[in-house]
Length: 215
Image 1 (cartoon, rainbow, N blue to C red):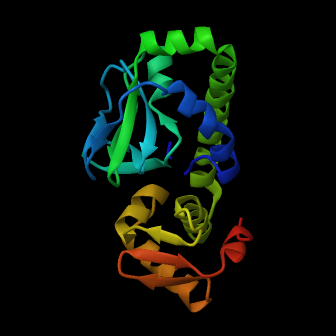
Image 2: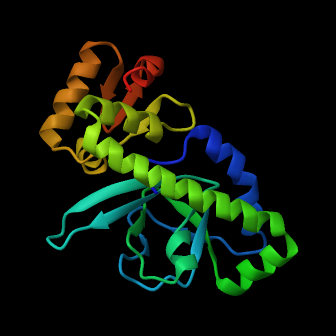
């Protein structure tokens, strides 16, 4: 959620095989980059399993401003909180890359939980952990310095190789709650210190360990 975020690498690896089981037998629908998966305020009739690609979860303000909460990746689920509590969705979700996603409805979910009760317990643990992570996200926004927010975000967004982040300064600003000017200043300082290398639309993490030591 997010997606910020989000689950750390260890948590992703631990849950992935379970959520794949939850989506077993369902078709994977293709989404192009920028395609809407669900909309803030809508009724949650499904939650989703990502078979391929990356998805951003974000809040939209009344004046049209956007705040990215989480970036989800292959093997993760999203949209489950509103699905289970029956309330309107509090976020929207859009494909960042080409995605293949399974939509899980109530009948299918009930069948899987009846067949595999351990998955229901895993879901309870996952939802509880999500609440904890959202609380941490609020604390980060309130108390972390701008450079610490950017460092944590870059580490969370790193590709499978662990050192490449494909993003714009505007995207980082939306995700970290910072202005584009502040993001550019922080990235420039990181580059001068040898922590990152900036390319066109990509940030290469030259010293991930140093970034981790910042918070």
